[in-house]
Length: 122
Image 1: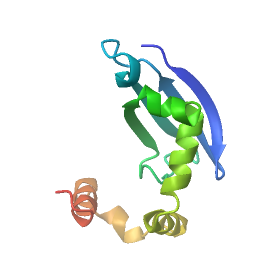
Image 2: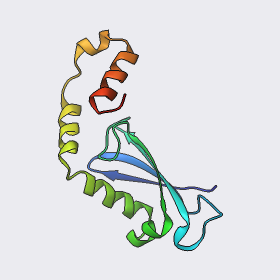
Image 3: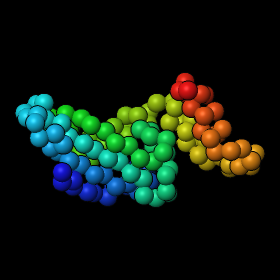
């Protein structure tokens, strides 16, 4: 599998976009599957409207990516669309707040499970 790699900046966040236009060689034409990876480079692990962790792996029909003009254009449109949602504004506000020093006293597994439960997972 061969990936192309491009570096872009979106809203002051440096990103690496990796794209494999033929992820599954068995499928062809409109059914051909592609794979996109979005990784935040700076600030490290900064959340995005499409991921809280700074990393997103996404499988998609290649024809959809081509409709947007390519992987970069697709990712930018995806980020712009998702950034219009209220949850992104909340994530931005939370990332700008200083960390809660009490959270450092909790074991990591407690924090992760509490966070997951708060979002309906777990």
